[in-house]
Image 1: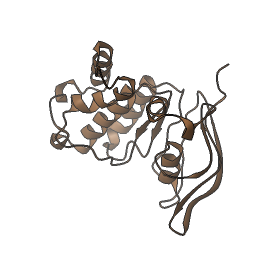
Image 2: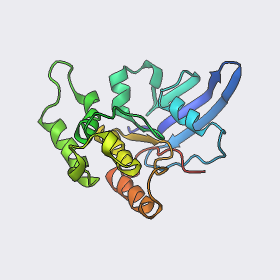
Image 3: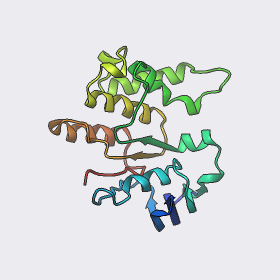
Length: 199
């Protein structure tokens, strides 16, 4: 039986020093559903997404597809949740092709490395996101929008059932934002939790 929920949290709490950024949050995201988190700046939207992705220390219960997130091995967790952060930093000297290939790391053996399937998957996302003309360029040579596309390619190359995104179109030109989101939806149809919308 397929799990009913992509992500669930009970009494999810994140502390930063003496400050409770999140305090006993209960949340359930159904599978096959797009979800957008909306709120004012400083409300804790990014903290919530990072905690749900297992990227921040937290307390409370946290499950991904009915499995305890904290009990999963790092590689298994990486296969289940792909992350695209806001203004995410990367190694500026990496080529676009290398960045997208990073998304295949959870599927690779540490002894073997990338295989033909990994290469084919990376090429698929490079083509779909119109990154082929840029694939040999380094991140440092890209515009903010191009960089965001490359990082999206990395996230999609994971082929995770859940995709978490933190203000994914913040660096994308206004005329291209609709096309960008349409591409994401086509590439990763509603079977995941999609993150924070611009507030």
